[in-house]
Image 1 (cartoon, helix red, strand yellow):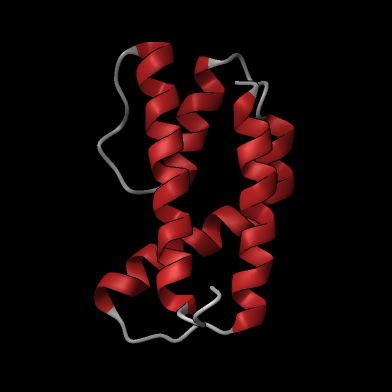
Image 2: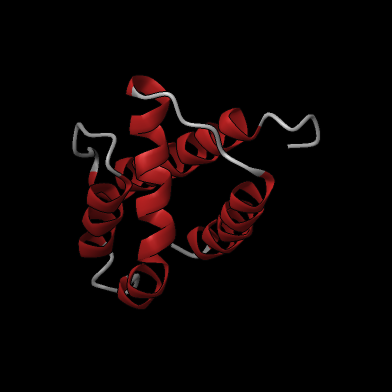
Length: 103
C-alpha cells in the first residue's frame, strides 16, 4: 500500500483471509471446501466452531464479499482500486486477524 499498488494490496488481503480460514478449517475438521469463496470458507468454519462467528460474519459480510470480488476481478477483469478502498479493507483485515486469533 505504501507504494500505491492498491490492486495488489487488496489481492494479498484476500489471499491472507483465504489462507487463514483454510488453516483454521484444517486444524478444526481436517479438511476445507475446495473453493476460493471467503464466505463459503468462513461459514464452514463457523459451523465447525458451533456458530461462534455468526455475529462477526453478519457484521462484516460486506468486507468479506468485497475481498471475494477482488479475487475474481484480479483474475478476470481489469479493475483499479484506490487508496480509500484499500484503507477500508485493511481496517477490516485488522479486525479479521484479531477475531481469528481466538478461533
